[in-house]
Image (cartoon, rainbow, N blue to C red; front, side, top):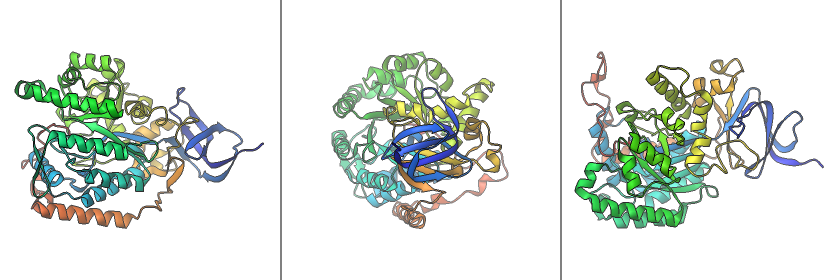
Length: 480
């Protein structure tokens, strides 16, 4: 009896990232409802809809394990002055940003992700110096609505701000306590944590604290950490942090924050105690090779992998100087670590693709459903147009993907078996409307906080080897 599938995709190459890491030439993928139902070569089964164009390269939907909501509307603000950048983030995110701001930014970010083949992302609801917009559920509701509209998957990371409390939110600067922010986080989890169903996941986040912080506020940090871990245990959510460095991972273990459902961002210049904490708890590391923090120090990715720690890849986007193009970040990661070791054998192409597919899925706790092209898994599939001069000749698919491809090469994106983009057309999202809404909300936010002048480039960026006015200086959590 012939089976009539919902959708059939014929490809020149299929990079499965399955258990055998098969790369299938001249194959096909069959999809029924939201799952992959068959993968093979030769005679293809029948289907109601067929996608077939010369040179298509299939790979799992890319997963960006660390990014920031809000950043897409404050790109390049401050023109390289890091202290000013953090102040602007705080003034907008905690002050003048309305639900319409968060919705417009999320719509813009989701469209950029979709057109770059990112089907799942972790997006912190804020950033800068640990500004999380959790005074009310409104910002999170707006962000989640944009996720549903886009058809992609997003883990929205929510949590409290950094000591001291209360934090102040809104134009009226209303004081909000740690416990009030935690109550909002619990409410957002109850409303939106359904990454495989509605595609709106929720993660929890707590600022990174270092030993000097413990000397000043140790008792309160322990109380907050205990409350965070209790909420995570009660809800089963992912836990993430932004900005780890020497000694802070070992402290996070001492505070009871680490588990196999903990994914820790940046993580530069780690020491032996940090390595031991990761191995003992099963926590994962999110490497952000294009981030400013990776200039200030190095995340020891090859060493972590060799120690048995799961490492995944994040963009740290969409600002101040980078976007959601995971192909860029894969190439950046390879060159970054090969230069460090002066060894082109470090971080090979297959492992690099794993970092933003199956390893990211493992770190986020969804590897049974996402991260590879296998029968029974969710049909989250990206098709690259391999018939491009920079992707030719048609050999060595992994090399082409990790060294030469970019976001503009993504031809078609399928999520949950639904075609969201085909031949770079996105019929369910109006590009002009998304761009206009984003521009209007960004203009309004900068005007509301009197920071319009911070959106101009300085003449001092020309004719000299170093920027004289302002520099990317680290502030707050150092996560951005």
